[in-house]
Length: 193
Image (cartoon, rainbow, N blue to C red):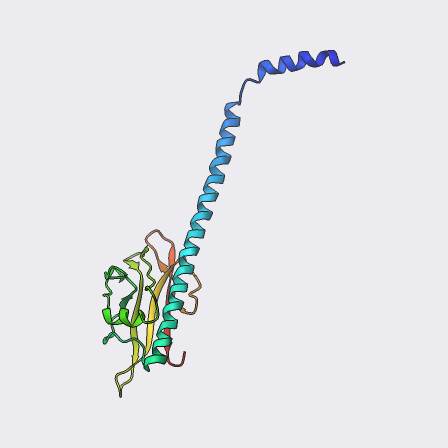
């Protein structure tokens, strides 16, 4: 019975010279599926990392506002009710379509609590405008003294229904230009917070 084995192996070698076209297409399809799964998961990790950095930055700013209130008896005050950029190292605008100016007085106050000001230069393409960075304004002023009692910070997170850290959600599904959404966050900091 074993004398047939070499003949069978020799006969099989004549038919098996390489992969068939179907085997190659199946292998390519499997590799493509695995590559797309990997790219999608890496993109999700990057978005989560950027959102975590944003929430950490905002937590630091909120702590700095609270420390300024404790040290100076008032929240950092740019002298108006306009939203001002936080931490832009180039001194350029930020916010919705870069409409928020930079305030040197706000930066100098925050530099008392930071060695360098955190900033998010990543542009989020919203449906009708773009967003960049973090913005701050005096949100409550004493009618008697004119002192800024509270500050408000706005920022965006990529994706819908994201957690805003210490802040609250203003809009959980702010429309994006590609049909997905983003989360608009805010935090209010006052002497009582």
